Length: 135
Image (tube, rainbow, N blue to C red; front, side, top):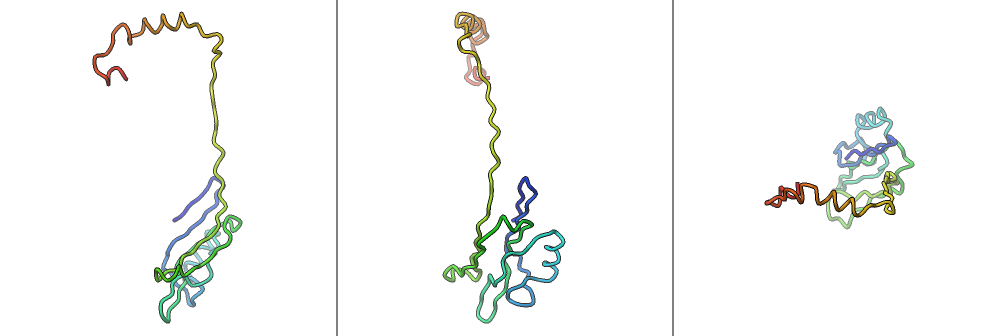
């Protein structure tokens, strides 16, 4: 999964299956790819453990290490041959744009409104089918 935010921050995570020369590293070409993109790999221990084999296969990389903290690898009670990788990710939801309009209710002319409504096609040519009425 690749995600970006409005600040241009990038977080890449997933099972990339690119084991490195030892159990706590990834493939050299993947490392070079991350470096060329300005990404730092944050998982530094094996995420897949089989008898006599351990590999770092699950990635969590970012171009802004301040966004990601407390990266942990947990064997999740051996439910899978892959460990569970968790992290705290600082995310901010953009502030919603709130706009509103208002009307001066005190200046509302009920008599004029009723006359306009009664002269509209809703009253002068009422629809005989629901969809036409709604339109």
